[in-house]
Structures are given as structure tokens and as C-alpha cells.
Length: 288
Image (cartoon, rainbow, N blue to C red; front, side, top):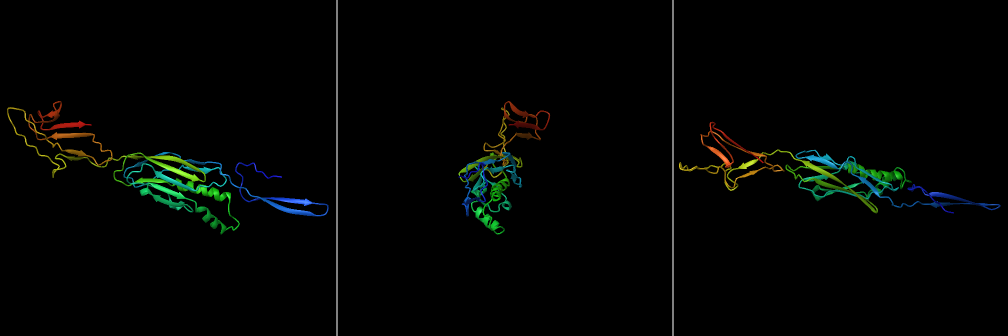
């Protein structure tokens, strides 16, 4: 005589009762047997980060939500998730990820790596949750509801994942964020990408004299010789043009010679210049 259950994931509780009745020609004996169902963790977790590409605008003070469509499930009866981690694998200065603490009952949250990593631990949750439930139903020790609750709890916390960078000029490197979820004997991961959108909010800085001089202006003196065409540099060889924006891009340079006289001019080479003829302004524009 054997007991069997053909369900792929049978209900664990309560224990099965088998009653035996034995008769002879005068008396009957009754005895009860019990069958406990033990879990076999034979299904992998299913983890999907949902939409995997997001963008964050430089200078934004509002975190961007990354995992609103994340899904986490386990076909095993207990639906146990022991821990999870979220980490920016190529974190840059000012990067920070976080999850909502208001959703984290029975799950412990720890932030590390200067805000670039979040760890979730649920190992202490089972005991705490059973004690909480037992206060309402002393006979309640383990149930399918508790296990579903446990898995969904991790999912809800992970769905609150946000990214922010408060640097005025953050790196434009695309961030790669890995989400890993562990259950006894199994680990699953998925990836979220965050692109940073550049904002051109700093003017170029021009120093015609170079960094070693006290002034950014440059004064040139031309020694005129009527026997030859004379020219003089109008900027130091140490002159610099910088841009504090993250891309550091300079699209063009314009130089205007104003209040000039006939035969005056400015040029970079024999083929790139602007002599003054009948106008008192010489306009030279360079495009990168």
C-alpha cells in the first residue's frame, strides 16, 4: 500500500491523513497514519527585467524608475527567494541606485559601494513572518500564501529601483545595471541599461594668453616694415579653449577684426583668411 500525488507542485500543508480500519468477526481497530509532503526545489527562478533601456538627463533632480515591468516567479511550491542584489557594474562618480524602503517589510536593505550597489536579504523574513502570522492564527506555520507573498515581496521591492546622478557634469558612459536573484540552489540575472542625456549648459572658456599668464586677454605688437608684409600672432601659442560640458565639444570659432583699415586682415593660413577691403570689419569663422 503506497501513497502518491501526481501534481507537479503538490500542496505541502497540511499533512495527509490515512485512516485504517481493521475488523475481525467481533472487534474493529482504527488507526491513523500521516504523510508529510517534502519540497523538492526542482524549478529555476524566472526573472525578467522588462524594458531594459532607460535614459537619465544630466542635471535632473528626479530619479528615473528602472524596473516597473520587472517580473519574478518560481514554480516551486515554496516560491522561496533568499536574497537579491542590484549593482552598477561600471559605476561612475555620482551614480546612485535605490529601492523603496516603504515596500521592504520583512526584507532587509543594505546599500554599499557609494550607492552603486543594493543588497536585499530575506533570510530572516520567514521566521519574523511566521511569528507575525502565529499571533493571529497559532496553528498557521507554513502556507502557500506565505510563500507567494515572499516571492512577490521581492518583486515589488525590485520594481521600485531608481537611478540618479547628481554630478553637474556626469560621465556619459552608458551604465550597465545587473539584477541578480537567488533561491536555494538557483541564481538568475538580468540587465538594465541607462543612457545619460547630455545638456549643453556651460559656455566655452577662451584663454588667449595661456594658463601661465594672469589675464586671458592677449596683446600683440606689430613692428611695421614698409618693405615687407608684416604679421603678428593675435593669440599666444599657449592659448586654450575649454568646455566644462561632458562632451567638451567646440563646434566653431569666430574672430572679428573691427574698426580696421584697408589692407588689415586676420588669417590662419594663406587660404583661410579675411582681408578688409571696403568694410571696417573682418569676420573669420572656423567650423570643426
